[in-house]
Image (cartoon, rainbow, N blue to C red; front, side, top):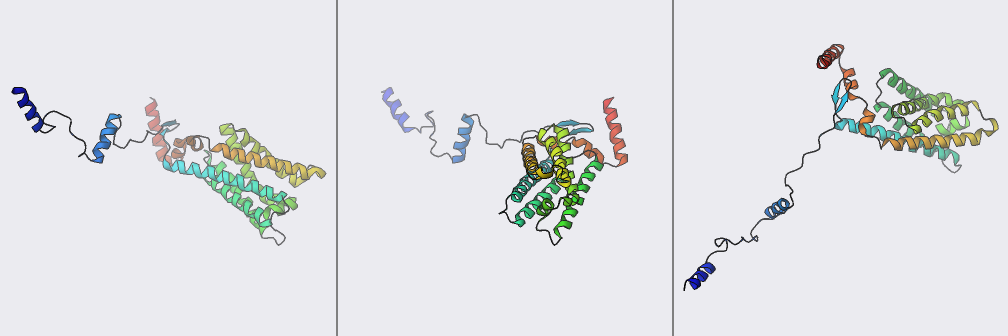
Length: 274
């Protein structure tokens, strides 16, 4: 019988020879993974990183690299540490139970953190940047001078009880005013403008005793507002795009060139413009 013969031969042949799907019991885990990814439209190859955003500067195109990101991170971190440290210092001055070393440590940590940010700040006009850094160094030296006095428990405590101490630490906070003004002008940050205005107001009010018998509560309020402005300003920096704190990178790169190289670059740009 032909039908019976076909049934016997079919049962004797391997499944693959009969056209049936092969068993997957012998496949490796890697093959099964590839098959699953293929069914889902995936790929086993590593995806390439997204292309970097290109910015058109005054002297050519530029991108943000890893070094730029590191500098901006450290700049913002320094501002944040300074804001928190100096706010804690102000609170300790208002608390009779706080030890003197706490205000001294907070002032020192905040000063060095701010100095680090000032070293990394991007300002097109190099003399202006050097001027702010010079003010900071003068104020830092003034702080060291106060610290070496025998009657100094801590620099903030000494300045709080001796208004003339503002002459020694004032230049350091003048650099804070400069940074606040720069950030306010560049990014229209209200908290930066507030920091730039409150810093000299607080120091001059304390130095001159402007508010007379009301100096204590008024200066305490000014200190609280100053701390709040600085904390708000430092926090707002983390929400900015990285490229904003860099500025026009092509300008800084152009300034690093020799005069001859700058002329070559300018001719090249003129040729491209034509």
